[in-house]
Image (tube, rainbow, N blue to C red; front, side, top):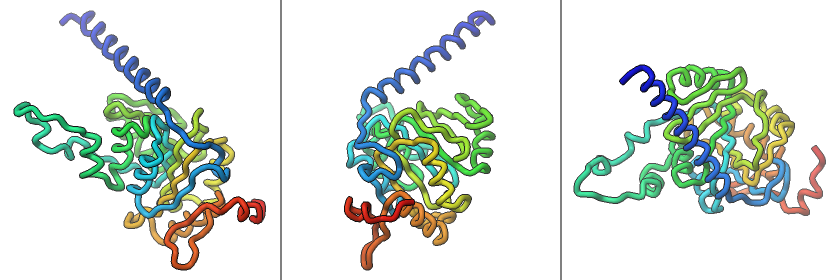
Length: 264
């Protein structure tokens, strides 16, 4: 091929890729399913505290959310290669078999690392915005340099992999997404910040949500008992009451209880 032909081909590929991403985003936006929205303190939004990220996925799935942006807050991005999970028989041309890959992944491979990817496959989420510590955002900047579809600015890192766009930023640089989001906060994040500080930053951003999931991330090495206690403090800030004796889960207070609660 001539240099001119190569240039035309490259430009065409870039155009088609951009067109596909716009189309995917528009499809996700048009098919979006949300609940009642508000700030992180609003009593009408759904708020849950769970032990494992798998429970967060099931909450989103059972609520029927579709085409959503998730703001994911944790200490680090745990990546994996989806190709390593696909059974060998799915690569064979004959005999021809049909697979529901999203269902297969959910049934056989759902865990604390794959749950966001599986939520993407099942059209629950279409875009991920991660709030991470400075060190983790710095690590993602290095990863972006090796990725084909990526961009780096002073405030954020963008990486798209397998058609799923992801942004990485710090809480200080976060600005609210222009739509109600699913909010996930892992206890591990509180290794780097106090709950009151994160609460102030999210409140000041103007973030709107219909579902907040706080995850204790039990079993994760960076989510110690100290971080889990801080997660409980954050839960109290957004109006989730601590568990009663003999109860293992936190709940939202009733309207009467909220009216009796002191102002923050």
